[in-house]
Image (tube, rainbow, N blue to C red; front, side):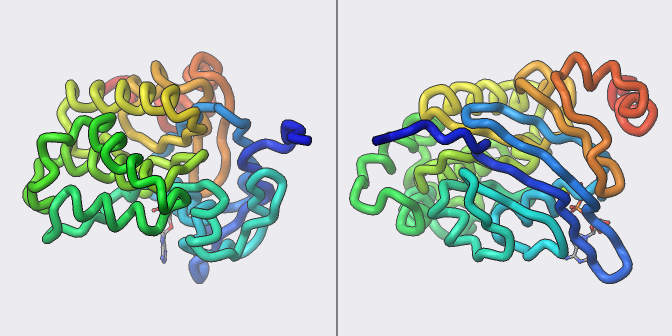
Length: 245
Ligand SMILES: Nc1ncnc2c1ncn2[C@@H]1O[C@H](COP(=O)(O)OP(=O)(O)O)[C@@H](O)[C@H]1O
Ligand SMILES: [Mg+2]
């Protein structure tokens, strides 16, 4: 019988990451439910990327638990997170600059969960609007197209949980809006749960269901965009300057 799981898709408890004397993360507890769209904001150095590294197997956290569908995952390698349905993009795109768009996507596909369903490659290329760029060398693409390629490379692994680390960084305002629309549409189409780290706070707040704020490695706030944007501690620590810009 296929009982729906009561466990959150992602459950993080008391996550800590120590780099020598520096606590990049301390006691971070955050659950993400199936189908949720969560934004993560916070100043540079707050620990946002380190959080993603710990929930995708790039680093082994110093303390705490990371569960996917109730199964303990902390300390497991990236392949185990991929098999559990986690895919991510990187703050600095990790694409093969000398390979074509099509080759990059084929490469990502072979590491995914749907080897054998190669129709996913063409489908994702169309859905991420890079159909006309298949033969282009990835490294020569403008930033917005490289971001679309990275999203496509994550999607061909057939994830359930998509982690996006500043996919709008370095883009123009209208490109940022385009990326937000693209993510929202892909999320619905593929039934994805999404966690999106981004500095474009206004766009993020309009797009996500819930926002978590990291500050000096700690979870400063977690709530709806309306709750978080009115939170005094968030305004003084971070939002004051962001909104004023
Ligand atoms: N591999 C590492 N070794 C040492 N310090 C690191 C390492 N990775 C990140 N840090 C430090 O951890 C803190 C959090 O970094 P990061 O997670 O990249 O922050 P954010 O993504 O919020 O800007 C920063 O002070 C950063 O310099
Ligand atoms: Mg970062």
